[in-house]
Length: 166
Image (cartoon, rainbow, N blue to C red; front, side, top):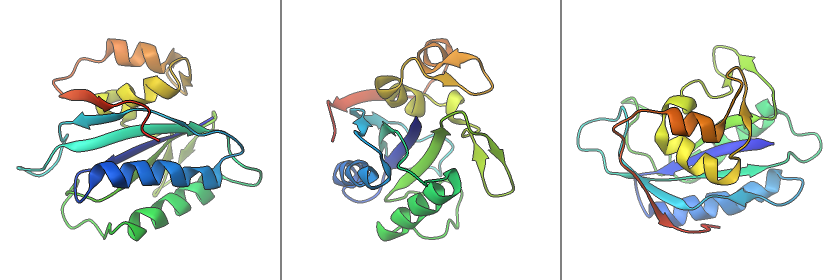
């Protein structure tokens, strides 16, 4: 199962995240499970950054899709929605798509780490991910997403704002 984290804190964030979740069907062999929308506080962002709208989507890969191919497609979609080169780390962005999990695949290159290296430390990732894949075991931890979320200690502000986003 593939798990994608989605986020936006610039522009019409709700619309952007919902549209992006719907577009993930292009890469799926079947149904795309989508989380609710979550309003979340910015983490490691420049001062005065707006809150994010975050969500997660899970699906099985269509035939022939590789993690690298999917990552390339996700980055192209970000650019379509107006995301440019990051001048400031974690600057506001119209669309952020993170490839969190791709089955039990792992990668560790200069440009690509799979599973996503910081996801298990971020409530804004784990809260929506738990909605779509609560019992999935996170590679390298031996723990489910539900367990990782329950054990996470954070001061992040995370609130579900809209059920069944897509």
